[in-house]
Figure 1 (tube, protein in one colour):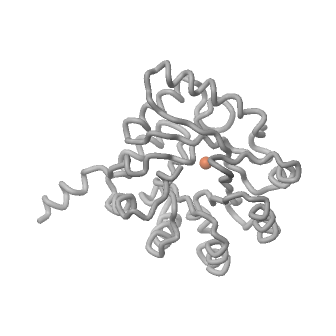
Figure 2 (cartoon, rainbow, N blue to C red):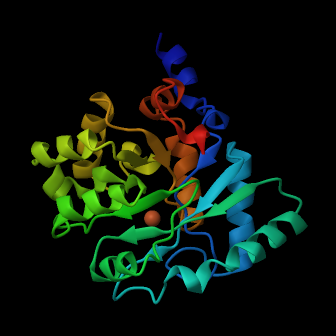
Length: 245
Ligand SMILES: [Fe+2]
């Protein structure tokens, strides 16, 4: 039986079932993702070869790290579309942002300048070591404003969220979608994150699998991850909503 298991475990998941990736850093030169258009085209080609047909580009918007706000990158989508078309790759795109919930977020929220995608979906990131301040109030206001919230990689907040089931449950109760990183479930971010990722999958918290793609190292790690039986099972479970985007 050993050889049967080995054979099965070497097959890759059918990534075409996902169709769309909603989290990536492929607009060149504006965050810690792709540094130039050549790399962007290469990464898009790799995503196409994996089975993806649509990518949502979500540059970081985070205070003290990147001098970004949506006005600095919104127009760059056209450049990416053009370069990818020229390379003969049939990939669709939308642009959003990965908004860290910090002071900059509050400022942008107050002037109605948050960057959502696909009919009001907003990708939000928590700080890695503590919950955002006034979380409940801010989430409430965002939902009143009509945003459909997607929490980026909840498993990466294991440091505090893995022992705060009340908050975890309240986020779900509010209808916030949970986007897990593919690589988390393959141990890329360490055993602490892996353990919490497994818990979240097992308890049906996860709605969307995202690449959080920054560079070619991530692509190589994803090729390996898609052979992981846990990730294959999740993709084939029919529970994920990637293809709704
Ligand atoms: Fe990201």
